[in-house]
Image 1 (cartoon, rainbow, N blue to C red):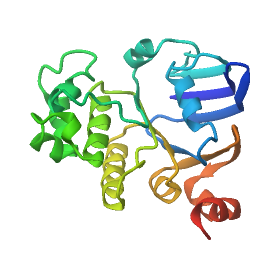
Image 2 (tube, helix red, strand yellow):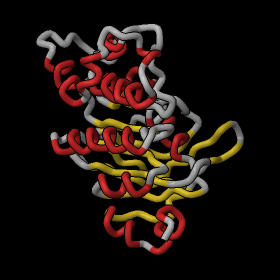
Image 3 (cartoon, rainbow, N blue to C red):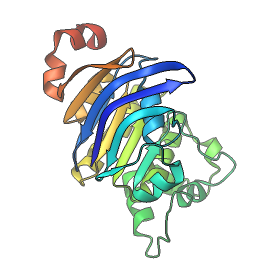
Image 4 (cartoon, one colour):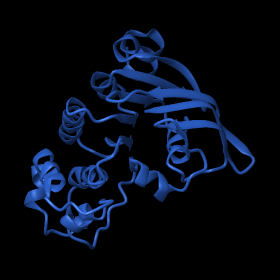
Length: 231
């Protein structure tokens, strides 16, 4: 589904990602973990066309998409849930969701699927999005991305600012999507939850991949345990 090879990314003249290699197979749940400032968000911005000051190769379903515009990538089936959610606070929940459509949801099945995944959004569908709690807004941002019926769902730090209870709810919903066959790339600082949920993982530090492997193997890795799990 996704293969990144030799990716180098720049902010102006400053290089922030070096020779990054990463792949996600269809139906896989893959996480990229690392501290703040490691380059995770920059990588996602490049992947989704928000930053085009880069070199290397990004193949999405066999096509090199490096340098494409975000709206073209969205139509190809690549959906991003951004770190800051970027909902429309003065619009109702249901209108926020409908903005995520690429084509008409004539039967309403996609919207109903999202309401089953996040029942609170059904309860609040006519409520202004800005009045939702942080966790509800995160669910709304995920639901809006799902309205496009993406081939690849990318989430940038979905647990940021959420209570442990809400983090658990969000991750359970992502696990359910995984069971339904959704392909997911998850960027997270909550390393334990990310590795518990995903099949494989990459550790990004100072713009470079320093570890990769199966999630269970990374959970046992001494460096990961010391740096991220508090062992």
